[in-house]
Amino acid sequence: MKRLLATLQTGRLTKRLDDLLALPASSPGIPLLRPERLSDEVRAALVALCPSGAFAEDGGEFRLDLAACVACGRCLRRHPDAIGEWRTLDVAVTRRDDLVQRVDLARGTLIEPSDPPPSRPELRLPTLGCRAVSAGNGGLDDSEIALAGNPYHDMSRFGFTLVASPRHADALLVTGPVSENMLPPLERTYHAMAAPKAVVAVGNEAIAGELFAGSPCVRGGVDRVLDVDVYVPGSPARPASILFGLLLLVGRVRQTLVGGQPRSQRPAPPRP
Ligand code: SF4
View 1 (tube, rainbow, N blue to C red):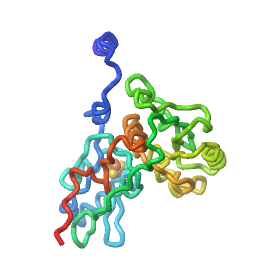
View 2: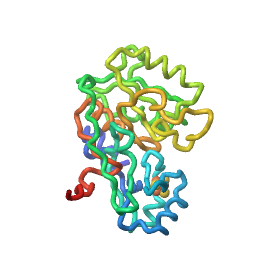
View 3: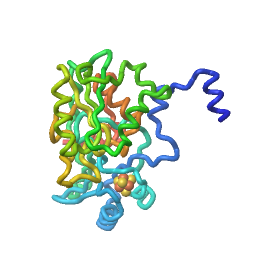
């Protein structure tokens, strides 16, 4: 309470972007595969312990899909040698594949993706009107979008506002796995927007369906029905991650995650 009062008195409620992107100490970080530590036993244990099926192995590859991770922290606690931890929230990407870590089991190394595509030049706008649509979401990601506008995050200082009509929107923020009953309203909203227009998938459900994936009642991700410009992972996606995703959309920040790994931690490419 004392801290809150001091903050209100000094008028420093709104945080700098760097401070917002730092993960609180109480939250588990993002798991990072360490290929050299992934023995047969460890890989089998990881597949068995993850409650959301984020780990998978087939075709000579071992994969970790960050869009399926619900941040329970089990893999980090039980296998700290094989799983590293990354503690920031600048996790939004322009390409779905950049949320997946892939290990080539024959070589024992991470598979290196190409550089991610840049944001579309026509979307590099000084201000951005955002229309949010909940396409079957449980409500958490929708709350986080609302929180991105509170005085603490204050997305309006970057020129981002939530608008009430798709006619005024440049970006469509979609949450939820796209349930069959929400598909027609989602498509109507998208078609009511003027070009240039963007689609942002907010949260794991909107990216890949998460726990609803495989249900006959959902499409299993927004990019199954609309072209997606930016993916913001999280369960739910944090307000700071949503802010970072919007900044990525308008070309004001550089994408950090490539192939599911932060750029600074990617191994050097193999010598020819
Ligand atoms: S932290 Fe994520 S990847 Fe690890 S066990 Fe939990 S849900 Fe699975």
